[in-house]
Picture 1 (cartoon, rainbow, N blue to C red):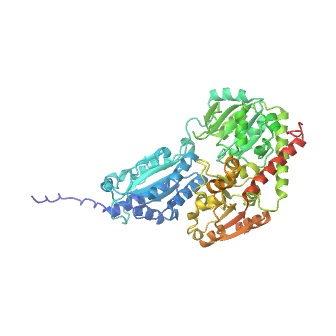
Picture 2: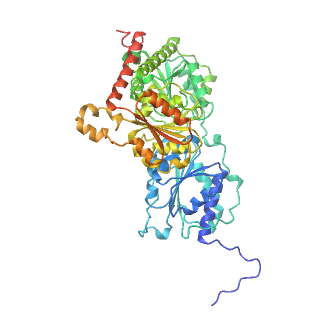
Picture 3: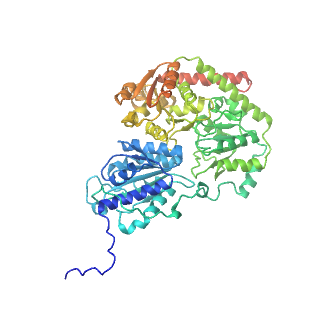
Length: 598
């Protein structure tokens, strides 16, 4: 039988062909994400991701960085999300390209950074038949993602759900604990088409205000206030502010005001947002607490820990042995407690909690407690600065402090999670106006330069402080970096190997040649020449004055520059020992430390 004729009336709307359907679906996602406030995308080239890549690059609302190496692209997206609090879209083609994202997805998960991962895929009929460039992407990133969704190839019947899919994916990157979301999007060929009419905008899919995403317990409950405030009143306590203790405007003010009210020192990490020039802020705890008498004299009764952990093992050991009542406080449920010392973990907004406690005006600590901590900070800071000023050559602690102090207000500093982040925490002076970030979720050295690229892509003047191995590990990030026109200064501490291992027990228990081969791993690479091969201006500095001049000169010019600060591993260990000895001697002379107590 033949096909019966169509009944009279209006002709049915023509369905889109596969290519146009792909393009319309992707244009709808991009438009909805734009309406939700997303603006940054990091795209690695590939064929199967064509529909979404074209939708992003042709939309004038988006800033799109095309990055050849998927691993580099993924860490750049982490940096962007970390600094803005808004997820970047991260896109790649099918196959092993998606696996290259895994390390950055883990970092975003553990650092609570919003990230919208989109991996293109083959359609169902090409799965399980060994089609080229096809892997099983289902739950590729395991428990590291907040949500995984595999909606299947675009179909006309699903048009009404496209905007909801985009909104749902975005919202799931946020919430009490931000993190990565994985959209596994399959496309049938042909891939490149023309977008048709988009689904209508649904006002109910607009982004809710941030305060409604934070959870019901954003401050302390009445019961918690009734238990917490009397417990800390009049006690000898400390506030320890770690990674992202303060992220919203006014957070640092509220936390510092609470420290003043309680008469407690604020031991603040550079990444906390609280390491500001203020009498309550302590920047020298690692060096000072190496003195046995200082550590005992300043033993706390109460510890309020806000945000993530600090890098100092000295501080961690002091807290562990203190016997103090310890409370952990953070916006997310990622409250670290590897030593199992926390009496209670509270998921709440630190600034809100600080205001709640302050409103009840608890009694402050004894005045001698406050005065002793203030004296320790002043004396230790003077000893650190005087020691570094005696060295004209490159010293790694001085490099960290000098880079931080050279940056203009509003700039950002990305620090590698090895010795640079420790030197910054242990020895750098307080500084406001600069946002500091380090990938301390998983504490890897991979992707540091790429993370800085993602930060600079937000429009901020950015510096990266990295070791030579971290720089080499992420060397692919240099590809096409010159053409990105980002204001980025990369300062590389070059001690020809893994300098952090010189501080570990392996250095004294492993035979020298084996230690060099397995741990120190000297590379012998001319790092300035490597940068130059990518068309990036680079200079080598072997003095402190040379580093300062190189960094200030690079900041005065637009574009990307590399400053290689040459150091020596064994000398670096001795400089650290010299600083710590100078702090101990100064505290002892003042009657606060070992020497003063005989």
